[in-house]
Image 1: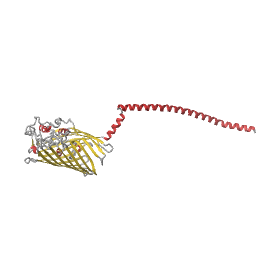
Image 2: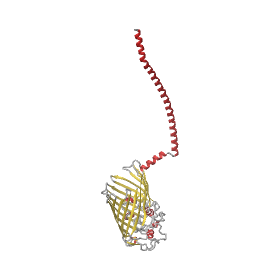
Image 3: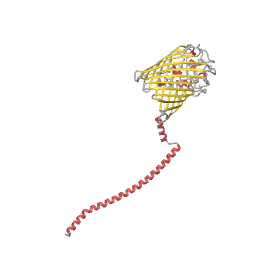
Image 4: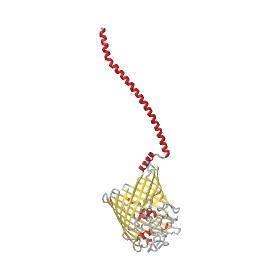
Length: 485
């Protein structure tokens, strides 16, 4: 019996021995793992300390960089945010014009000369006003009427019509501050930079010289703020484009190559303050004050000009009534006798109505009516003169790449002197445009002008005969290439 029990115990021992050995090994492995984990924890703690030290050093270095103004990342981020809000655009336009009257270039140049009283007047016209020829040639945009089309005062020549760079950051509800800058070069810049000169180079800065095309004209430079009043009231201060007219200075925003007769009666920019806002659905009001009614940066007297507008804009149509009233007119159509700049007793009022209608993607039209009244008393003055003008234009898209535009205008002049002759001008222009690429197009234009102005006796337009204005009509042909970006 004892032998049997001994045998069973021995067998059990043999069976449990491997299991006991296995448990011992497991315990040893667990112990080793715990040791390794403890070592890893020590290493991790040491690395954490090192990271903390490195982070502290990085923060110290970042603080030093910020204090030194060398934070490239922050500057890059700020620049990116700025570029996201700013709108960049521009236009490059070049043309060739042919005047079928073949006027002499020196006659045209002297008639547009910004330095009258220089003793270099061209022969054959008959000197007036102290020896100056055609001293009152000009228009608010110097030297267009009675001579040639606006911004094309050099006959039969290649020219850079316009190189314009525009950068704007509109004021919005999310970012209420904004600004705008338009800088232009070329023939259009020359004409506007020199406007307001003529016989008045002692008052205005006429240092721009003749039409060189290499000097800039500051068309716009303003700051604005969108005040949280009602639907938003926009306050704009600086130099900004005029509220008047259907045609504008920027070349790619017109239907034709040349600007029209009414455009020469209108200013292009004002220096002052303009406040505008929406008062009802589609209805906006604007009011402001500027140095004067012309494009000048500085005022030559203490009288200011008032600006006002009421406008309605619908889905396909728009209508605006614009009024400018102030001093220092520079001869709207070259017919004011002996205007006096720097005189607080002169008054110019321009009432301007513009209607637009775009009934389809292919057809767009506008019409523009202007009434211009000039009155001057004191300081050698004593003149009153008024004009009214009507213009209409439209463009029809013959295809996605081609379109044809037509413009017609009539301007009537009346002088306070009963013995003075009435003035009448009219023009008809046709323009064919073709898009060579999405941004590049070419335009072919033919323009016919006819009429006379009171100050130009019976004839208005120049010919090659003695360099004088002895023709009642004029035909221009132009070709222009324009790239918009």
